[in-house]
Image 1: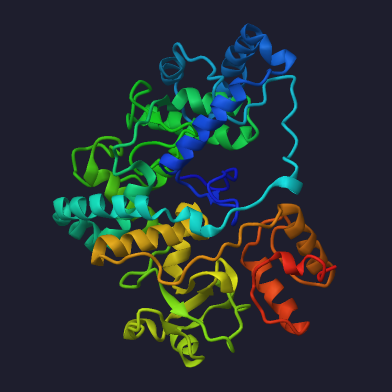
Image 2: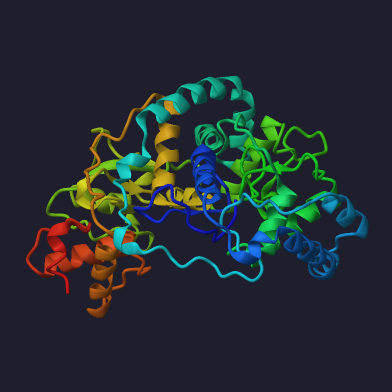
Length: 438
């Protein structure tokens, strides 16, 4: 997992930001499509002279990276072993070869975001849940020990395991050292990848992994939990007590490392991730967000009920809960707990955290899809949303990032504006509002 990584295109609706874990088959598919597409495009003139760039890369390893690595405690022997035979991987996305400029930001005028419902493929969720239930049973004893140690329910751990690496079955074909070195030398986020490369070298120095077997994703994320090297150093644990925290081959180590990460990021023992609810029309949808937490009993007092008809757990009533309406009034509505935002630390996306929560519920209790349908709200252009955000900012609203993507601050600001202007708050941009917010 890695903090502050570049947005990836899984879910343009919320501008999904990967957290410290590089997740799943969808991202690898996106990278493959990107690579196939870019292979058809002419490289900048200077990038076509690859032998010269490769020579610059080797000089960079010796003269730039090497001194920084030594300062971090990396020995000459480790550097020699790690970079023996390493060349640039020209097939990776987001590369900026020396002498070229980063690509301009994509024109947002034609960039539609899709309905969030597209993220929740029922076929995929059912498949992951079926496999997850079987593996939950297979590893029940280990998962009980993990929950006792870290307080994280087994179904949550298994859900992340499935979402990130297909329960450890996903292929990890890339040399992590080559990927990280390539991106540290010539990518749009060189500084971040440089830090991760030095963290990977520390792993080699410590004997945690060797370069030949340190395999990862196209972004350098490692093993079954898809940890970036810095996260491995912080959170990987040797749960099977064989003297080595092996997140590639040891299921106990991989699962316990996921739980350890969540515990360290603030997971609250004995609390759920959240509940799908029904919010009465007389309760404003413009109250969502982690900064507007209230006791769950206070939300219930407004008339908010669980859509399942069950009562909120008594242990949750005095504890904080937060409203979440990722599609405004056009989709499922939730009261989430602080644990929801811990899941977002793994991958900074509302939809990712909801996916994990729903998958975990399916694994634990055979739950199904969210009961309320996702509306078809993905027809707006980012430029239209961007114009709304700018207009709201001009009126003193805090919309978060002014980027054409409707995050929770944009949604609740829009709901506030609708209420103040005599409109029924929907807390989500739609075409009918384009000519009204100026």
